[in-house]
Length: 373
Image (cartoon, rainbow, N blue to C red; front, side, top):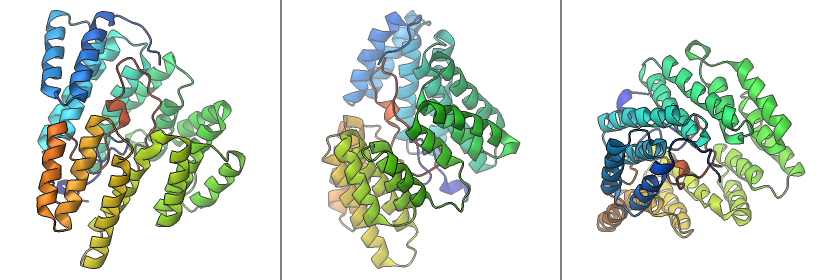
């Protein structure tokens, strides 16, 4: 893979691997109570598409009180939000560094807050992955990511999503940059003792390549027939084997149980996007993937997503319209997306939902770090 092809694959969701075509609960308390009100105001401005106003509010807040952890955390999220909408690689890297610095300041000021530590871990992972993909030096950033996630566990040892991140980081990164299969196994066993479903997710990451993932998840489903997490995983296993009809069937079942899983239609869209990118000279296949991807995004939009995610979805749909030859409709959708969120994500992969949870809310979201979906 050439460097120019990479916009960064953070399949944890902040960013994805390649741009499609030519881009058209309760929080642990700490020292940040005064910053919480400013963070909430900034969050509401950002969710309403007024991201620059939100940034100015937080910068003013921090100039007056540089010890507000909540303000640093929300500023870090704003910088990641803006980075995804910047369109240029150099902007992404610079904004990511700024987000990393502010997230780590939030952790320093309130080390007991799992949300801050987890967010910092995700950003550090992004830096590590970028280094791995571009021939850089990912070892230090991976160590920082692992350190952030392990720090997060100190405040909430039973946070399944953080444990899954550690299993994935230790198992999927090469040993020479910090991967460690034995530690991945240790965290997987820890999860298995806590929760059968999340334990199964952890174990699936450690399976040998030749193991049939569809069969694996079908066996798990027999014990957990109405569990949306298991049904989702089985659907994704089918999708990775190009068995789309079966995947869609299970996605629908998962969404019926948990409507928040409507984002699975975005995963389906990503599948078709990469299908179109790999179609080569097969114009019929290309257009078929474009049409199916467009339909998948339409299904997601009907679920009523939050404003930044709606803007992202409309942006994706605008690309499909452009590539199907309907440029006027594509331009109209792009303008609609910009009106909702001037910094809507231009990446192929959907933004991580943690960018849009309210300040003070502990994330219950999990997105694989090293997979498209």
